[in-house]
Image (cartoon, rainbow, N blue to C red; front, side, top):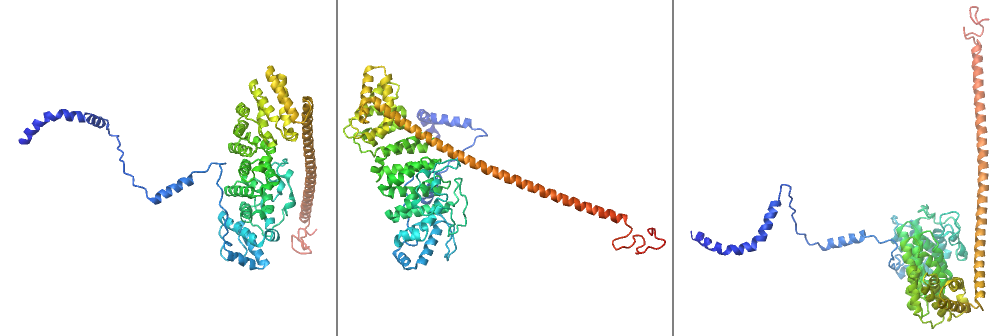
Length: 593
């Protein structure tokens, strides 16, 4: 009773406070209870356990393995190949003590292991070959070559011949060429076979047992063998160094060509090998051996080959080959600019990076701040006026050489063809300032046909006198830099040069037509000969069939006559009567008469 009275006293006092605190909560609870039906489901939440260290490692590994690398992205530098058999000096000393025949056997076994074939002298069972085992074998060959001498291993033991047979089975001239039979592309125009011991499809002493066409690029050697050959080239360059350049650098074309293979491991090996050949070779080989091959690779139908060639040019421009790359900019920039408009975005991006890296090798300090804007204008023509404005603020003090002109002239030529007259005036001012410091007429001569006609059009077509005077002053300055006395003489020289180029092009087209006509004539003669042989074979077959039918008919006729004769005679084959069975019939025999 006490509790009842006490609660009745407190409830009126506490009810306003409690109602204000619980109104919202009770309202939500009532709404929730009103919304519960027979179809309502309740989701129970459980506390997640803290992941262990091993589960974190496995999840991280699975995520990294499941995330594919974008096609065409730049890979990191591969680690240096390490030998396994000849990793210690004791094994190399033991190899030196062997006889020449045993040394040859050792090199042969290593070469077969690098090509993915079992060795002749293996005591343990042969396991499946992979890239790791082939890398060890390639590094062992390089270590043996370093110890025994390159001429002995590569020439005497025939290692170089096997490398060439695996990488260029159809000859160096067929590299980078398309599968089209009418194509004359590839390395044929710059081929030099003096440094290659064999370009024939000769039989090898190793007897590869799995020779087959591995992909759609008409390669008759297995992918594992080509990968092993590339690994050997890379190991020789890494371990031997400059002594291996005369043997390895001529095979750069084959390494670049394998970058377009259908095998991912072979592509990565080819990329690493081509990078090693380009970065570790002597800078003196840049203009004579490396760049001609890289330029030829830009004509390849495989986009990965183009991408790797552009990447190698970029790496060379950023490395020890800067001075040599700067000297060949007049020939390099037009070829790389063509790849800016490639259909593959990877090639386009690589071409832009290559242009930036190669143009930055220019030694003219006046143009260096404007090079990024110029390269951007080459890749994006709509920003040409921005690059010209950047060049307007440039003060030319140093001599302008051919490399500087190769960077600026394409953008200036495009600026002279702009619609707005103000942009044309800016380009004319830059050309005038630049032409005053040209060091020799030979440097600007290749760019005369690019600038002189456009400048003359501006002089003749512009409507404003002030702009016409600026264009005429630029044309006269450029004419003086070209070594001509007047504008008419410069135009005549330009027209003569264009006429010479047209005649050379026509001659090349005529030669190609003659070659194509000779090929078609040879094909027609061969087809007629095959058709004639086919007709003779078919005629002989018809005669044989006719003779066989005649023989069968004569045989049937002979059998029919014999059968009729046997039916007409009363005697059988033994001369007995068919009625009585006696040679002399009885008097009562029906066949007596």
